[in-house]
Length: 351
Image 1 (cartoon, rainbow, N blue to C red):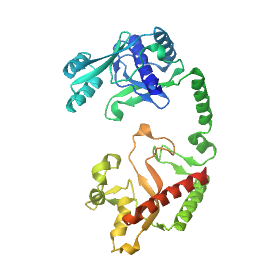
Image 2: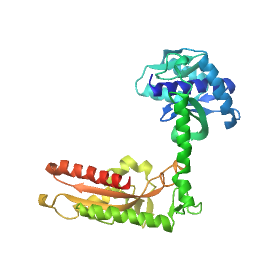
Image 3: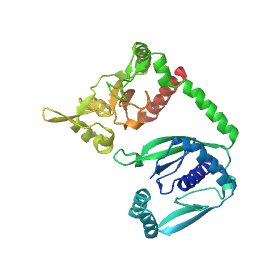
Image 4: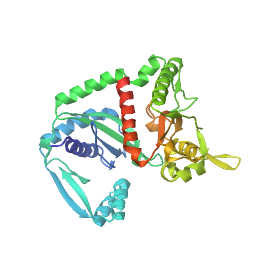
């Protein structure tokens, strides 16, 4: 039995218990994830994370009843009518999207008295679910990750093939938390995130700046040895630049809005590609000039939702050792392998 199938089945079991304990709760989605599962709920009554132990206890009893997971389908209009009567805007939205894509049926799974719209797969019966699971935490989650939508309550669960593997994972996670870079960054005075500056905008303190300087020098020196030409390009660019390159059409949702400068629209760059290729195309080149390898320690800015920001991992502005190569078709394989070798060297050197 695949672990993803077990985890997804646990999400349904959890939803069955939650809707039993909290009648009127509206269901959103409940997928499997890397270490377990979650389900998003729209509670119509007060819910506290303290209830997780009771939900988990009832889940284990539910699983012990060895109930089958029964699959069936409904015509798409019947499924839509079912959730419209239930006044569930989340399932209704998903079904309407299925109909737009030309689907004619909607899949459902029933376990015990609990029914949920789902394409599966699931275990045959609850006896196939091992007891290596626990409910982990709750969090707020906007419907479909969009902050314009309603905030739902997400309940996370951990799930593994056995109790032993679950215990091992929890112990490893606790050890990892002791080494969390946000904790170490504060203790070692490496970086600071201050509310006056803003979320996702870390400032490197003297020790952190020293570490960055060493890494930058190491990176630049190695790239120069390998024939890269280091450049500096601005953090801003005309909106026209990104429209011409195609980035604006594809990435504008991840870019900060344009700013007006003397009647001209400028944006903070999310990548340095257009700058580098503008630099290359500013003068004619012979095929004998190739390959041309540009590299830059480049500052970039990408719009993140506040709930996704995390220490130095997810930020509003970041620095990337970026590079672009212009080469002939007959040079492509060698250049590609050179990039792989460069990345491997950095990774192995830094451990």
